[in-house]
Image 1: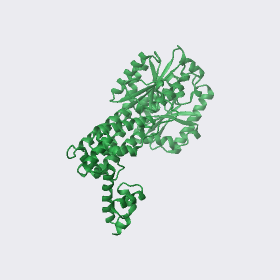
Image 2 (image 1 turned 135 degrees about the vertical axis):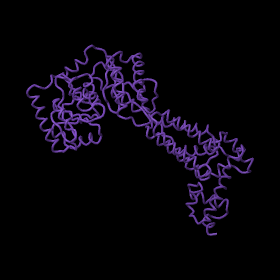
Image 3 (image 1 turned 90 degrees about the vertical axis):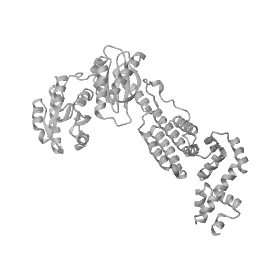
Length: 511
């Protein structure tokens, strides 16, 4: 199979060309794409294409500039070139032909025309091989191209002579994976700028080289590989390259290899570590020693429903400290359960939006604020680090608690009564109220009984039964009433209703 690289600044064109024909049936496979001439010039050594299909009109480095630059870098045997051209670009296409392009295709590309061009080019490439015009075995196999083949699992294509040449000089190679980060989508120009900065810092100084490993950049260090001093210097260079585009980043090391052939192992190690980048902090290069420890029995995921009930009470009580502590503990439990980033974010979004949604109903005077905060809670999906997400959440719950700290008076019993009357339909317990109010549950229970003459549970039952009488009077069915007032078991509701009212719910409704 001959390798093809497609170069066009329009994503739809790039993707369309990949599917317009059966490439393998023509003896080709699409090995890579590029968004402009500069991007293609950087990727070509790694991909090692036999054929490049390139648009003549592109921002930045256009197709003609790219062809000239490619021929300067590889004067001996550059890839075959096929031009993409619009009707108005014929002069560009003509100039491209003087640069030894093999032909051109008009946009929109016709399937039959492309098939015919591929048939002709395959014959030419086959003839090159038969007549000995193909490149010598190791020619064109740069370290970048060798590494790219190894990281993509195509190491069998790399000639032994090329491996030996790349390993000359001894020493070792350390593979780092770099992932630029931002709360916004990172555009192609910023990504290309980061790569150029890193190339200037490492390739031109002989300290290492870069390989594309989408969605990451693989940086192979060749100087002082694995040493702390090299890590410190590399981190500063990566930091400067990303800062130039206003980006944050995470960088991990997969360890060292004594030959370029062995780079696959540290690459796998680095990818495993990078898969956990959400919980990794910045400020340093994370190494293989930080890989996930396999637990004998993984911790269970936290009960988000129960946590939501506790959060609701803490916010309703205006207790920012209790609400913040709850968010911290739930987050710690999620990490202990080894939950993935999407599940963590979805869990927290559900936790907060559900609590604020209920508060908007029970505290109508704060409905607009609760709805606004619930919308803000969805912004956690833009956070790329756990710590950043957690700080955003803690800020939201503190703001919500302060907004809801509007109870009348400081008497704890009065606050309990207000919480019961607003949240009687929830799974209320004295312990959960005590937590929300930051009190000892035993002490709070005695305080409540001394003030009201009734235990917490009795008072809660009476509030629920009074509300149940109202709903039965409106004609609502018994099982619906039981659920609405906080009793999940209908038989249990029957017993409580008869205890406090003297008749069954059904009889009361007929009454």
